[in-house]
Length: 155
Image 1 (tube, rainbow, N blue to C red):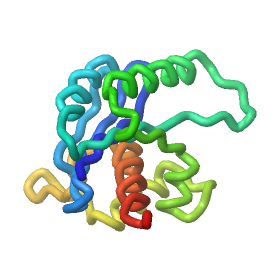
Image 2 (image 1 turned 90 degrees about the vertical axis):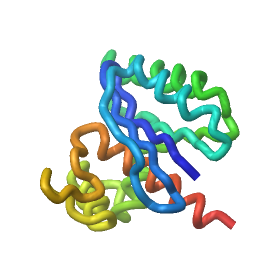
Image 3 (image 1 turned 180 degrees about the vertical axis):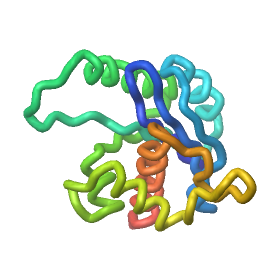
């Protein structure tokens, strides 16, 4: 199954298209958030595609305008995909627990867990499986891997 995983933001978002059968990234990028609609529509009509979006959760702390704008974008992107049976909202805490075994894991812990799993990023002359990844792409991959692993573990 192909998983289109998104780390949404109010202005820019990271995304990966992950092939769970081959455990590899097919495409990735960082785009202006409105441009994700085109990427989603391109993959929404493939019967084997699933959309996974990192979801924001409240932990009792005050949040700002960017968090609410990100929530609005998450809803817009889900609606654009149009298949609630093939979409998932994935909480950051669940990603941390799955990949690192701790809800206290940091972004660098998650990144390292992904590098341990897929291998080093590599260089321009010898690119690795995550070559070119930066900022929002790492959390998008973490969401994809979490969803893929949970689907494999389901009875």
